[in-house]
Length: 302
Image 1 (spheres, rainbow, N blue to C red):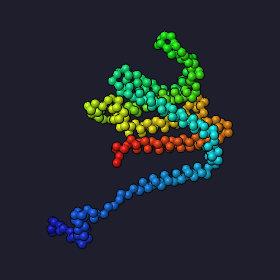
Image 2: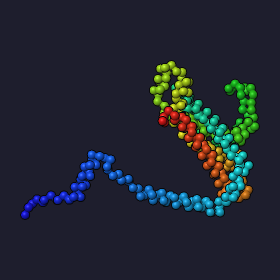
Image 3: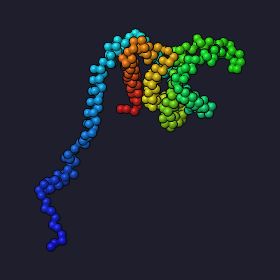
Image 4: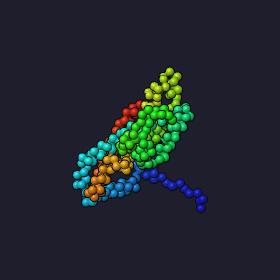
């Protein structure tokens, strides 16, 4: 009996397979590419599509949404005035907040320990105190200070203002939103400036470019690419956060919707009116963000 086995006979199929493999090794283009199959991906797509279809069907067929009431109040004059008030609060809060935030950011980047400490203290305080508390504080400023005097520090005053007439509800709301926004804007701007390579400033200084021009022409255009996404998020958050000033009885969008459904009892459709306006205006801000980001990305995309 033989202890070794004879090698298996090669069939014509084996010979053909080896011939194909040999030719494919010489010419990789002849290899058959089989795409990876993702069965669970299609299952997830199907489940998601069904859920979306059910949600849309419920929006259309459920009488509880009361779309006729929604259509009646969506473009009502009182709602449009409230939208305008909301846009004003957002604009003033953003403009003043980022103007102060830029100053605070460069104070934190300053070589002066005193300026860094003051800026850090401001940011720490206004990020720690809830926005609603800040708004109520500024709204009740006249309770603490009957008047504001201007003159020699710790000495006699030359003229004064009555705080009761100086800081109204709208002024207190803008002041609270702007000061609160400045604390976050400062960190956004500081992070963007730190993202710029310091070697560029050294090269600019070696060329004799003034410090202010270095910041304006070299640092900020590059820092904007890092600043813009976070800044846009803050602006959108502020836009939606203006609803919190309803505690001060200011006629912004959410407050006005509350007043209307408090009278007619149509809570859901009136909330949908506010929701639709928030979605519409937030989408507009997102489109604006896209074009501004594309403008500052000219040097990085081809």
